[in-house]
Amino acid sequence: GAGVSQSPRYKVAKRGQDVALRCDPISGHVSLFWYQQALGQGPEFLTYFQNEAQLDKSGLPSDRFFAERPEGSVSTLKIQRTQQEDSAVYLCASSLSWTSTREQFFGPGTRLTVL
Amino acid sequence: DAKTTQPPSMDCAEGRAANLPCNHSTISGNEYVYWYRQIHSQGPQYIIHGLKNNETNEMASLIITEDRKSSTLILPHATLRDTAVYYCIVRGIQGAQKLVFGQGTRLTINP
Image (cartoon, rainbow over all chains, first blue to last red; front, side, top):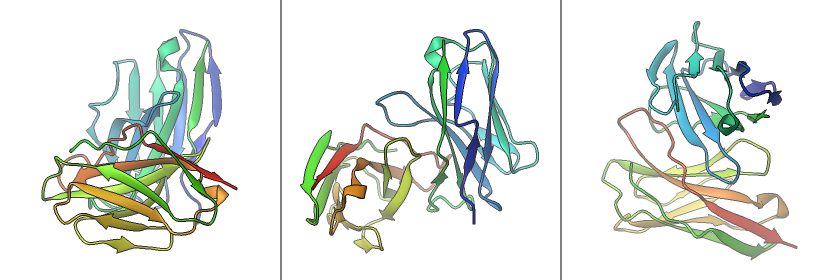
């Protein structure tokens, strides 16, 4: 079956624009995660969903970042009034269940460049 | 979650075993050791995980010391496609299940 998909793969935004990044997790996966990866760094956690419930948003860097998963499948990460420091690769991952030992499956990421 | 320490880079010849070390001296009894790798321009890929016993799968072997303060990921016959950044992550059973990535080890397989 298909893995985690993300769209768009590349996004260029002018500073101040709003962007929306989409994640399609593996079908049936309960848990969904968003990570941010700056150039040359490891991914950093942003937020976590279990089905449609956002259980942890402690990693969101500011109130300009908003994530949703209204029907417990597809998720959207929205960044309002983008800034240059938002330039990064945004990774989505899904996991079959809430059981912590389950591995996370990552998508290819969306590379956001803010000019 | 416990912190991990890995060498920033390593080289290995193609066909040889690649042994990647990781220190996690503050690991607690209910924390697992996970390994992921990230090939250039791709998302991280799960490799293997373990609690205290050694583990083996089709990709790699994981050796955890008896005191659980360190571990080694072994790629038995490295190929050029194994060139990637390898992340050692310690994660507990409870909590948000997020992965806390460090800097990882950049492994280069040389022909």
